Length: 187
Image (cartoon, rainbow, N blue to C red; front, side, top):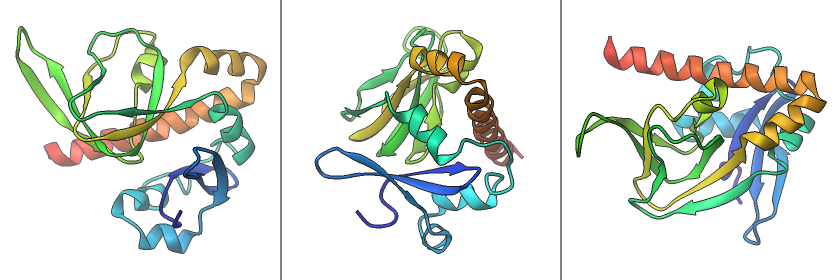
């Protein structure tokens, strides 16, 4: 794959790219900063919007541990991935494609919250709060995701408290970025 195919993940030892071969095997390569800066604007946030300077993020070895038990899953256009209120404890990262997020506002009434795409993460609020999903997510097109079950993360964190701290720091940066982008559209 080219330098821009895959998922970029920030870590304390640099920016890493998780790539998959056509046979479905995953591997890690360092993401050259110039390739990231030349790539789609969605990748630039990893450098320009807080990831570069954030301390306490997972290392490459910690990302490997976190993603070891995850799975890649495909969703067809229109397929419901997450229903508002569901207690499915998973964290999703979009590898390709896009999804629409919305809130249910009564019988057959939805309020669209926006569209998320490659590199975006969702499900983290349910994971963090231990509650049902705050929104529904539907594939807007053929979409491939990397999915990590919360139970796997809890087991890993019970054995490695530093990893838990680093992962929660990553989630806080993700949520901070999302909040900043939301405020920018409102203001």
